[in-house]
Image 1 (cartoon, rainbow, N blue to C red):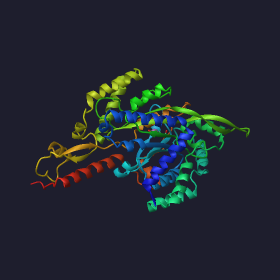
Image 2 (cartoon, rainbow, N blue to C red; image 1 turned 30 degrees about the horizontal axis):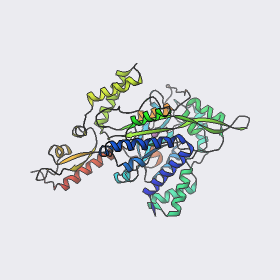
Image 3 (tube, helix red, strand yellow; image 1 turned 60 degrees about the horizontal axis):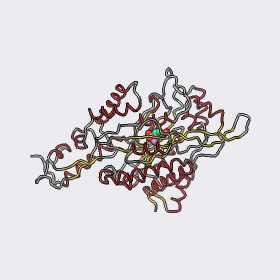
Image 4 (cartoon, rainbow, N blue to C red; image 1 turned 135 degrees about the vertical axis):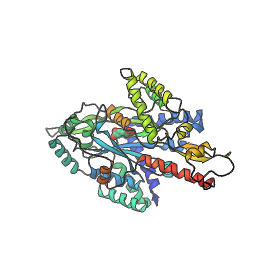
Length: 462
Ligand code: OOG
Ligand code: NI
């Protein structure tokens, strides 16, 4: 029996091989990431592994895929379900500034800490919203839905293997191999000719709409390795002559703890694709839609920490308006120094980030009260906080990643009505619970507090 964890690791490895053959620059990015990680490990192995073992970080990737309808998203969910990956978080990119994108998204990932440690593979998955009138008029929306309704991204054999794997927690060896082959193949770039006129019509609305709804199949859009020092990677890639987007997105580089997620990418490369023209002829051409991205992960923030983060981002925006990108980084570091706790301990004490707890060797004799809060346990010298790594995404960075790789202008009619789409809607549409990231982190932190209380033989409060 090949269990869901092994299936997930196998799928991530196969996709990585596939994407490396399709987009060779991805292989360079992975190589450079490994070199950066080794440099950081040599500098300080303990600090390097504060947010995950080097084995986990080296194997770690996230992918991005895009589909056209709830039916397709529900099918993707069955495939990822077989791999122990569950929809987590809701991202609405339709009102992203400055470039709205006509999609809503979730991320499929393991939700359990032990599973994340074994293999944290996750996929940012976006779904087109043809019903949104700001992007598509009635006529185009109708044709788009028909086009998407007539294609099959995943065949029956793949889906039934997925269902069996999900129901039974794995597959027997031969079937597992078959399942992984079919699953990876479903995300390969298709050689089928693309209807040029249809693709162009959609491109006028949005490159992303064309990439999703202009072709008969789906494909992996990028695969993202994790690095321990993203500024080092950025400089290294630039030295190799690879054109990077103009910034690292997310929190700035600074001396204090890394929180949430920092990401950067190189611009999409042109790839040969085949087109069918209006006269019926099929000729080669090219499209730029797929790129390379890299990320560094930090500590998960509580809702209070996230509010602070959002306020700081707004402050950086205000203070750096009309200044260069280079200045912006300095402004951001300055704003962080003024407002962000400089230590993990202070993040924990102020309830701004999520932690688990470890009992101290030199703890006081005698147990803490059974109802002691995490803050009391830390203050009393019973436990030390251990950071919980952020496993999710940032809407603003995601919008930036989409936007930095758009070539066309795009068209949005702000006077038209958008379609109501939220997490509950998406959950209903795919028939699965969508996990809330902050609830997962909170449950993990709370379980740890209870565990250390048990370990400390906590006594009822007198
Ligand atoms: C997804 C963009 C978002 C990220 O890392 O924030 C993303 C896409 O381009 O399909 O992958
Ligand atoms: Ni990404």
